[in-house]
Image (cartoon, rainbow, N blue to C red):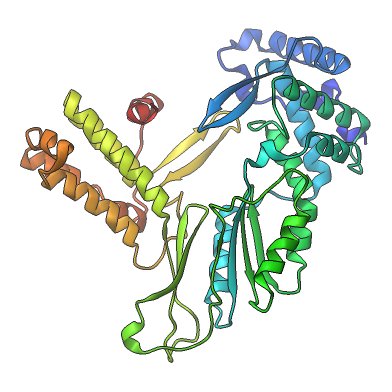
Length: 414
């Protein structure tokens, strides 16, 4: 297990370019040596060099944890690397899950769809069971196990339960704990397709199973402490093979939301060999975009900053590149790259375009009244040139400087 050692050499390998942000070139070697020295010292003391290496804050109703000191973050990266090296499991890819799901749903066979959500995923794992699991992980070095358990104790000292949400090692650890559940549900003789993205589960079955028994078995296999969220869980009727008349072609047999998408299964006609699958942006994402659009227009009504409004609309309806300084690479983002699997009628994207049009051309409601005195025909034309549908279909790109992105997001961050 030499590759899992917490040595100066191993810790040096997890140092990133972004670790030297705001450190002059002349001071970087000295800073690196101090980082490594402090990390080695903390490893020997199992984080007792401070009262607690963790701190926490609230985000979207959840308690999120972070590691404050730089040298402690090196240790966490080393721990995460060690867990990854023995897991043999890659993190699920959102795009490939949706693509594989679409191909299976197209098949002209009877099936049933289960959508399960786990309540408070990271927080709900039983503390004792997590520690027991860590100590039983094969091929994980004793030092890694000891440091992991030490972090969990520090987490518990702050009132935390389960695994600390927000830490990269928690994502890898919980994936390892869930392996047994994933394997058992996947191995059920009636399971055609199984995918889990953190706490979001989807299963396609042959529809031959007793749905109540199937669910009870799955609940029994959940790690101790975890429970399905009954309010968010969903089960389809049996989607069968019966063909219908041509007039009914555009009707949907069943719709559900998963990983930010709304997936609708169209009824099959006598001529269709496969079911028609329509994939759109999820309804709850539409609400989020409408909220951001409304805030952008309200902010414009207050400050009259035309160019900022246009940039906000371009940011929402188009695509752009984001540089991740921690990973030292560029990521593509925006309406197409966040939702590349959209296909079919695009009714929800059209709905968003209609929302912009209603705000600009209508004069009803508080916002409509405020805007009516602020917009001239030229500005209306500039606003209406921004389209979610067009931005997705044409994969249209825009470029913003980092400081401009901060200005754009300001009205959405409160």
